[in-house]
Image (cartoon, rainbow, N blue to C red; front, side):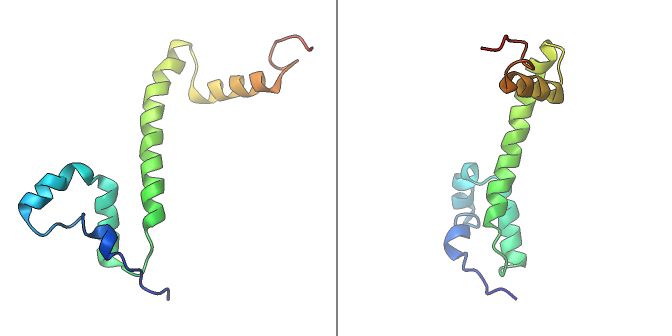
Length: 101
């Protein structure tokens, strides 16, 4: 079994001691912080720090997809179709439709 990981400094801001402090800090605590705090409470032997990065990247990807999808749709494309057209364009002639140099 892995050695326990000391998370006292990282989780201190997640579980403030008094209600006023907790309310003041709520804007800095996101869902990923709460999930990590729960894992740290239940399984202090696990290093869940990669989950924070992966979770936030996953949330960001969702936001980006929500912004890009309407742009693709305005041009009659889905995400996959856009990716194929972009790959063909990057490949150069003859796939891109541009003449060879």
